[in-house]
Length: 374
Image (cartoon, rainbow, N blue to C red):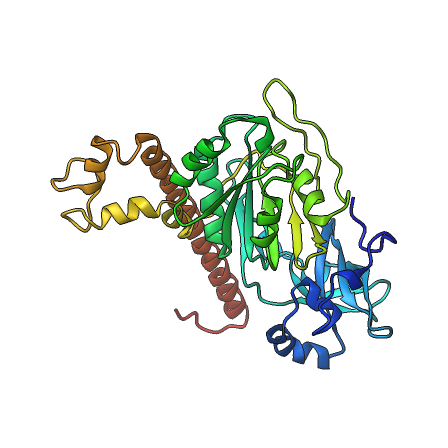
């Protein structure tokens, strides 16, 4: 596992000589201005590298030496019952180095982007995978036939985050038709760059590096080569690697935590554990992932066309002539239904919270002997 204090990696290699050492992790003058009131309160800016059971590793500029170092900090003061608001890898934090018995995360800066998925199972809560991300790198292996429906799901997740999606087809050296498969994937990823890469031969690695400035979050199933990609981009063996099963190319969870890793060419990479279940958490991500269907819908005779039996339906016409594959339409409808379910559950949670708050106010007012007014 990558250790920010490791002797084999010096943070000066990743810092931006034109700014503070923390600029190598994405710190900007805009963040500097945003942080000013917190700095006046004696707090230190830091970026969260890893979160673990109420604590985190955070990289910051040491006030004494001016050099980057990593501290272990307590995150409980900013913890929240809602997992979306809890500190996560990639967050910018205000750390109180003088707190006892250990440094404490006193506040989080607003997130520019966030990758949020629905937690596994029937619950409708959200979980943040990574924050303040510029690019979401979706890795899929060519060692087995890519699951187009799953890639569409990852694309919706990426678009919804506010970051730019990038699809990388790994293990290109294991197949002879990588370019044909890439063309298929490009067909279900409108507006998204799709690369074929081989960590073994180095094919496509330089192009990948050029496509991942700033902060990149790496997501995908286990066994697609995420840890290997991380090592290649980092230029060192910073993550353990395990072989996928030969029978079905499914992998074990080599990566068990979300971890932020500095890259020698600049920028940082957030490696994430393999995702077996990719539940969406609502929003416009589905519409953006299926922009081609949205464009077709604009040509329908009726603006509220349901794409069933309505006359002049451009979507149905595209399905009938094969321009739009039925598989893609089915995937679109399925993800739409998931979004509608999440929206209904979110509305129910809000209604429950409002009712709980109103009951508390009513109880307080009655205890004081006053009238209850709506």
